Image (tube, rainbow, N blue to C red; front, side):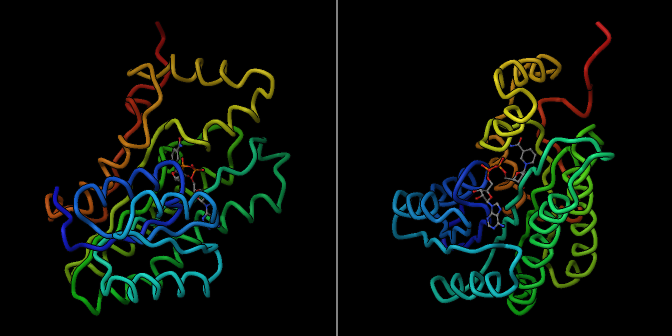
Length: 258
Ligand code: NAD
């Protein structure tokens, strides 16, 4: 995959999966606008990756911030070839019967409205250009339920819905829109979930979950980035409206009988 001369925006690009995508894109010759509300980590990553990178602090739930990061990318690099619509939060682990309304709204705000606003502001640019590829970060929680995460599961199902709608709308203009569905990936997000489930022994939560995976381990951010970069690249030229798991086999074979 060669991204020479190509420009990507990566939201949630300061940490975890988004940071791995930003790194992978720059390593393959591309230019990247990193977007995140975590300014400290975002500035540090942009400094590490050098002149092919800018960082823009933004809250993806605010339309003005979204318009500003799109404009900042255009001002810096002139085009937007790839958009990794990736920022997300996990919310709290609690049953639906007890789930906090404000946390539900916050999760839907980042994971659904944030993804919608990204599409709303990037697609017009890609339509003007007559080219572009979008990858939305959903989750295996967009495909199957998991007790204790009603907002997260609902939000990630919605991301897959938005992906299909956008793909249908902009496909005729040659723009592709796909989603990735990571399983457990070793980032701050899953560490936070494990701490919520077992504050005194989060490692035991991760070990138990990993033992039920066919590959017996959590994935890495780089392994998700490889799929995102492939979907951004010309190698995926006939793929749109699709979603792909990268989950160590979790959805194919949840915890076995033996
Ligand atoms: P992470 O916490 O390391 O990264 C998420 C990034 O999004 C952070 O840098 C955070 O600051 C940023 N962010 C959150 N809210 C934001 C907002 N309102 N505006 C701007 N930036 C915001 O976690 P990650 O695992 O890299 O998560 C990336 C994506 O992958 C998320 O959409 C997440 O739901 C999804 N995902 C993660 C896993 C996993 O196991 N880690 C599994 C499936 C899906």
